[in-house]
Image (cartoon, rainbow, N blue to C red; front, side, top):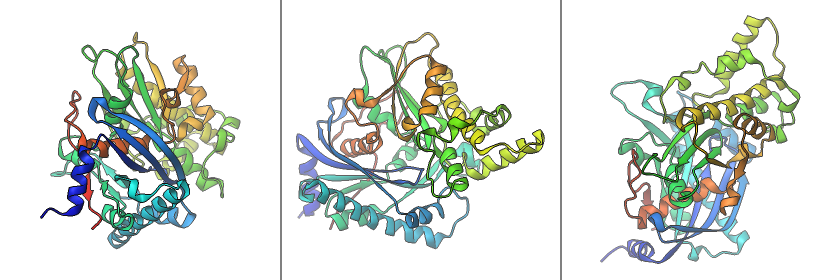
Amino acid sequence: MMNKDLQKLIKIANAPSRVIIGLMSGTSLDGLDIALCRFHGSGAATKVELLNFKTISYPEEIKAELKSISSKPIVELQKVTLVNDWLGSYFAELIKQALQEWNFPASQVDIIASHGQTIFHAPYFQHQTEPYGNATLQIGDGDHIAHQTGIITISDFRQKHIAAGGEGAPLSLYGDYLIFSNPTENRVLLNIGGISNFTFLPANTQQLKVFSTDAGAGNTLMDQFVQKHYPGKQYDEDAELASKGLVNQSLLTKLFELPFFRLEFPKTTGPEVFSLSKLEEILNSCEAAQKIKIAKEDVLATLAEFTAAGIIKALKATIPTALKYTIYISGGGMHNPLLIKNLEQSLQKPIKSTALLDLNPDAKEAVLFALLANECISGPDTPIDGQPAVAMGKISLPN
């Protein structure tokens, strides 16, 4: 006799619609995004409705636990093992809290889609170690989430992408393509989280290819610098600090000498490359050469320009010069007015919110992982030129 949870999964997969919770915890380590979604159909026919959304900020002790094992080449294996299970249980508690707040019964949720917490991203170009290939690691065990919520959980999405020849990122390409493609408008879906990335969606896919790439640093360097030098602050709210500073051209030039910027597109990266320690190394070198101390506000102004300039360089390198396109933004970076000003002035075009496409920009990444879960159980193969067309995610049954 078939396992009852497998029977339930088959029923969910064949239903005309599904309620899926998408979870996203990014490299900024600031909190968990929880998106309650209803999906109708799959593949190119996908329609998504965002029923509820919230971000639950992590307490300082949880941030400290995650920082102790994230983006470091050497950590305690026991600590990684312990936090993996512990974080899955913590995510389950936050889901239950959110459902209670929304007065939405857990019995009406079909699937939980958990991205997990990335603690290390290691594409081959970065580690250059034979005989190993691309690799990435997310923690927050899906079995713990499934068992403690009683809801079938799909997690660990990035491994299948790597197994099929990708780098495990950016995965936003799939959701962007299925939800936001438009036959009359060339679109760039720009996300500025810890790392900045974008998906290019040409109106005419016969002439131009859909593709996605990381562009460079997002908020990660700015946030790390603020957290170290301004105790009690997690980030530069409204770019208040950076707006008082001036761009240091020597520092900016040195930042663009990082090996990531010499790689061909598309490419991926993470906070392992854009780290506080690397920033401090470059900063010390600049200060020694200039025989001056660079003001903290000038460092932040330079980092805001660094993020914007990295995005602009990537857009100019990958999209035909004469092509008209519209940029729709999501992620925490959209709330940085100096960063947006730098982008708009350089590109000579407005940066629009995905809210204009009927999706809350703060919820976008969590929704896109819910979409990957929807595709995992119900989607047809949806070929995208140059990308693996695979069902991503591991399925955890509650019992």
